[in-house]
Length: 536
Image (cartoon, rainbow, N blue to C red; front, side):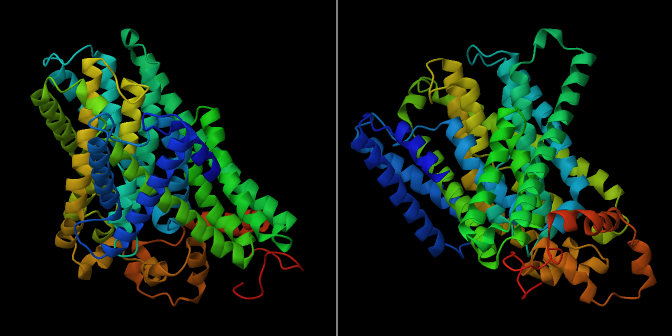
């Protein structure tokens, strides 16, 4: 995948020259900037205002200014932003690693709330932003924009930036918040992309109940099919590695097979017009639960750090990429005749994002709390504010969808389309830098460190497992439950009955799935097999 990315970048290398030398210079400069982002991110690790995403964005902006001055206003970037580059090369390793590293217990414990936020919440945000855009922009004489464009705007600005949010929240300090915001971000991105693609073939002149029901049915089909494909790819990789014992000859083959199977699942989903985001995410979850335990010890260490490294490079590359391309003079030239209108539209879009997110976070949190049995399981008012704020940032998904809708080549000569492109860039830069800088201080103010752990874990026997979250994978954690002394409190037993969905899944997993596909403690030892005597 790395060679494919480089080859694609070579084809996209732009410095007003298409020669090989210019492409090599462009890539060298970009790699050097990536190194600078890593070093500065390390130096600013303890800073409460700036994270690595914002650092990369600022470096990209500064580099764009330098290139703009060097070329005397002719160009401000060394690469042209391409939605194909983003969706094919940059997004898969980020989403896969998120699924591979996620604490599965927290994620599936809050799965219904995550689905409520990610699917239903995105639809509410979409309708809120779309209705606001139709009501306001249709009176501003922006250009040749129709109702379909305004609906597309609703889908574009409903996509949150889960990448930046994940760097702000801490999975160990705020496990509930992390699982909710992270899970919502993944489902939200998938919902926004599916919704955006559906709108491209949506006949606005024939809207009725049947069409709406067909659309909802198609969405459910895409969601379930994408999930099934990801689970199937993960189980297939686990079965192959478990049966063939590939690691006895070469650990490199194990690592390569895991990477290629994960990427294949994403590309198959795109080929079948499913949601690659959901597919590769659930593929990562299944691989971490089964496949990861079937490989050799050295392969486990390698895959864990390899996936995290690829994700980290892709995230840094992404924000550097967006920051540099944001100053593309060609985009702003077509909207420069009405700067006041551009600022006004950007402000309105930002306000619609604020309102659209508030329209579902607080009501859906209220509905979610109605299903909770104890007050410790409920989402507190302060946590709701953090969830609302952490999802206000917009990123490369919004830019990629905006380019897909309003242009195919990075800029457009149509006045209305140019304004929407520049407004999208403005909203992304402002929300990422301003909201991103204020998120850490807001979390420290609303959720002090001393109170982070208590409200985020439900009051149940499982809450005793929280110290293990920092050092164990999800499946490791599950097997450690046997060695933990459970309290005899009758109140605790009544508040959280033993026979839950998780309980029955564990029985099914232990009886059928793990013996067939492997997993911690369920891979039989044989000479040359991936099972180690130690740690089993």
